Length: 193
Image (cartoon, rainbow, N blue to C red):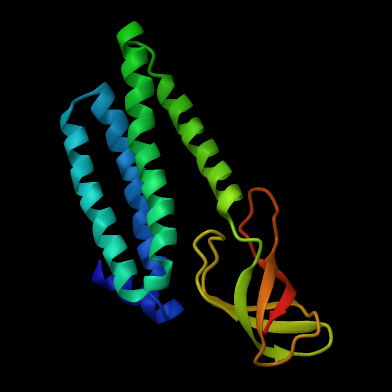
């Protein structure tokens, strides 16, 4: 794990994308363990204690390194983690009592989970991200951004359409909102004073 952490730190200058990836993988594992715990053996539910420890460890890394982002991470991943554990248990326990052969419910649970994630992301996603202009001309600017959890945007430098921003300005940059594609910085929305 330390090797992966170091690679992320070297590539992005921060461990934040690494911690976010670790939290995402942990939530997926929690969902899988909940489904297996409900259908196969209660032992899989006990494995969720391990995923809970990983979530707490990751949030502690956020608290230590990015204190101002702790609430955002706690609310986001706390809610997603809760959904990943509770939905399979509630839906499958009720359905398996009625008809034990209805394993197609696993697919329904995964679809419901993905729909809830999309709704949640659209509700709490940023309308833009903060950045700093490092190069600019009349039409184009290069903006340096930090990692943004809700946009899923890695830290880096992005060429965007300029809106009267100059080198050194702090700006809000709008993101592309194309379905099934990663968000990408498009245009400077406003200059932050």
